[in-house]
Image 1 (cartoon, rainbow, N blue to C red):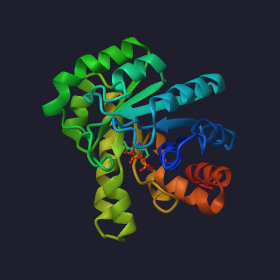
Image 2: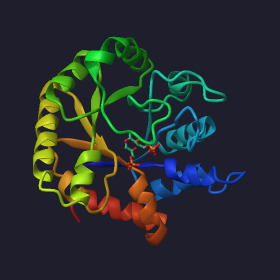
Image 3: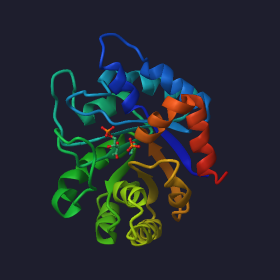
Image 4: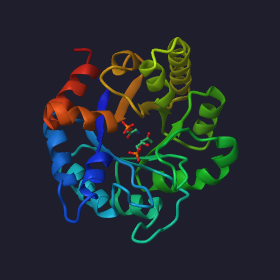
Amino acid sequence: MIALSVNLNKIALIRNSREGNYPDVVAHGRTCLDAGADGITVHPRPDQRHIRPDDVRGLAALCARRQVEFNVEGNPFAGPQGSYPGLLPLVLETAPQQCTLVPDSNDQLTSDHGFDLERDGARLEPIIQQLKDAGIRVSLFMDPDKAQITRAREVGADRIELYTGPFADAVLQQSPEVDDIFAAHCAAAEHALQLGLGVNAGHDLNLINLPRYRTLPGLQEVSIGHALTVDAISMGLSDAVAAYVNCLSGK
Ligand SMILES: CC(=O)[C@@H](O)[C@H](O)COP(=O)(O)O
Ligand SMILES: NCC(=O)COP(=O)(O)O
C-alpha cells in the first residue's frame, strides 16, 4: 500500500488572501483524513506565503489525535524570519513523525531540485541526527542520482523523497523522454532500497501521471497538494482524496 499524504499548502494560500481563518486549514486536514488520506504534509516557507507556524501546530495536534503521520517539509538552513522561527525549532516543537528536508532558497517559487550532498552533506549530518534524536524520521528531497542517494544514507537519512517534477512535466508534454526519466527513478528507488532507505516521492503528481508512478519499486508514500487541490475545485475535497486513494491502489 502506498500512503497518501495530502499537502495543505494551497488551502493555506487561499486562506492568506484574506484576513481571518477561511478556509480553515486544520478543518480541511480533518476532511482529508476522513476521506481516507493516510497523513498530512505541509511545507512552511520563511515568508509564510501559505503555511504559518500556527498551522503546523494545529495540524500536529490533529495528526496526533488521529494517530496518523504528519510530515513537515522545508529548508533546514532557513533561519528565523518575522514570526517564522526557522524549520528546526518549529519541527522540534511540534514533533511530526517525519521531516522532509528540502534544499530550497527562501525566494523560490516552488521546490525544483534535490540536495547536492557533496555540497550540503556535512552541514546536514548534525541536523539529521538532532531530528532523529527527537524521534523524528528524516527524509531528504533528492533527484534520481545513485551517487547522491548513497550519500543520503551516509549522512543518516531514513528515507528519500524523489523529486518528481521532471517526470510530471514529461508526462504533461507527452515527451518521449518520459520513459528514460521513469527508468532513472526506478533505478534510484532500487538503489535506495538496497541501501535500506525508504522511498517517498512528490511534486506535481496527479491523477494522470500517478498510474505509472505508483509502480515505482518500493514506493512507500506520496505527498500531493497542488493537483489534488485543483481537482477538489471540480470534484469536492473528499471525492478528490478518494480518487487519489483509489488511483494509488490501482483502482
Ligand atoms: C518538496 C515539494 O516538492 C513540495 O513541498 C512542494 O515544493 C510544495 O511547495 P509549494 O506548495 O510551496 O510549491
Ligand atoms: N513533497 C511534495 C508535496 O508535498 C506536494 O507537492 P505538490 O503536489 O504540491 O507539487
